[in-house]
Image (cartoon, rainbow, N blue to C red):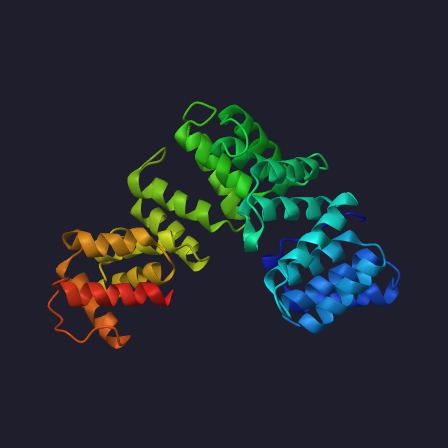
Length: 335
């Protein structure tokens, strides 16, 4: 349909998408929406030459999604040098033509102050609002963030909740998890763990690792549910496999103390290292400052892991002294 943005880029099955889109373009060569989709299929499969060719063809044919996708190539230097200003101008051209995806993309550029673009929350909010007015759920969710954080507007949890609700109803996973967070913490509403759990589950069902991890935490500590370490481990594992470093760190603790599973110091150390490598500062800080939070068996296994990785050459004595802490820092820098 005209204006169809396409599925989340990270969810594209590039091989199947390529077959379907190529056939569709073959049957409808003048449909620039389909040509743009073919570009996305190539993009997801990392065939950037064909992706650019199809994006350019779609843009030349008046498809502003194609132009916006080309702009991202310039912003990130996907297939050539980074050119932020060129990308910004392309975003602006498509945004001024009324494309909601381009409007949100331009809003992101100003919100982040990315690549030397001056950070300007008011300018960012203007573009997100134009995008949201056209029903783009991601833009609605971001406006919810603006009101929650008080960036560019006065902090207003009621407004934030309202925007997150609209975006969640539009299918935005980030909005669903943000609604969960609002209900969990009573932001713009009364605290309601059952409602928080409902929204976290909705987000988890569409692959949101953050929500999976928080569901694990609910069962871990017994918030709004009966404490159940088996359920906690199941959710943490799903979140960890989806990339959540926070969940990896919590999985480490469950394996260390045999909560919801048999105790396994080696597995605990593996997940702790994965958490540190994944960029979770809390797990690194805990190991360095509170070693007694971990079992002696874990402390020896993490030293063994650090030795195997070439970061540590000292004894496996479970003493997190300077040499072990330096090795942990080296592990963290690898991430």
